[in-house]
Length: 467
Image (tube, rainbow, N blue to C red; front, side):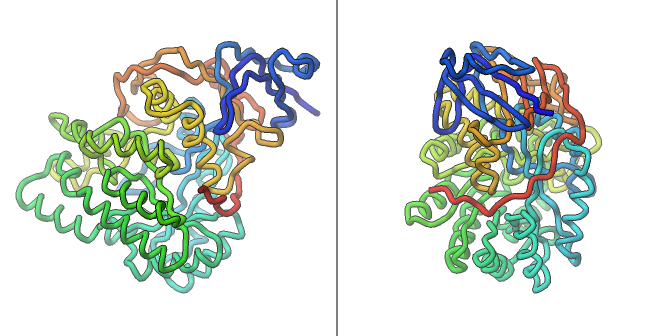
């Protein structure tokens, strides 16, 4: 049976346009847009009408970097696919791309099947997967081709974490060569993990064990060096490259230099690098452990370069790298040894709101907000125009956003399954009011109406290169 929803009276904002328009949704897709008050819009009727007067009507967010239930450091990320996708919906995100993990010595298929099983029937919103390559060999290289055909079109490699996820330059080059031929996109965690391990060992031997030393040993120069090396390896392989969670001014400079040469090199940053800093890592007691993630938070002066990179399109995407660990019982594993603190922050619920605050603070335009949070991640990872925009034929993933509502971010009110907020007490303006996922109400006037299992697995095309 056909179901129609009409969203009336809002300001529709996409990466390309801002128009006062009514939006007609039919059978889970956007059917039409028409200027508010026009004869076309007035002729429409629907079973459900949503009044969006004085509100923004924006595409659902696409968070292209999450880690639900990730095993790390002897524990697991505290959000399941059920709790994590529900929290994402509360924050106006309607699609996540999570990372399936290959265990060393095992096939890619084994890791992927494990992630399919974790997510199946659990998600409140749509989801897709990237694949983490932990073991580059002839078998896994062949499997990459099969995964691309299946809609897993991006592969993450690590220059960090020796003994866990680390790949050496030869393995990275082989994977890049394979992606050059099969159309996959290599995503790189760019930090010189071999050098960092030396600095970690030296810091601990000298009694420097507090969380703030996590930031000091993971030097910005070692992020920049690895970024430079990844770019050169990609050039040798003739492959595109996407560098994840860029945090340092020097790393942005490496990406900008490569892009100035016309190379297909892309970068993502995350809200924590835009809004938090080493000041948080240095909070007294063991509080700094809440802010341990990799790449680490940087001194505040790096933020200007990240905002500039987002404005100049040297950075194209803001994702969360959502990987939450509770302070009690998980972050505490690293008391007396910062290297044992599980790396990761909660943030899937906060991204859209923090970036709206950035619009108000003058860092971004409204359309650029939608571009870096919705359209660019959808294009980058082969989901556009099904996701990331409001246009006829697109999935009806639509958010009614109140740009005037004020809120205070807090663990007491968030919906992520973690016992602290990285943004505790921060006052911001703008809040998600209503969320539709494929035309179905998931959040209605700040009341959760979704369900586990509504979200479906979404295979992806290969990257739709951005200029």
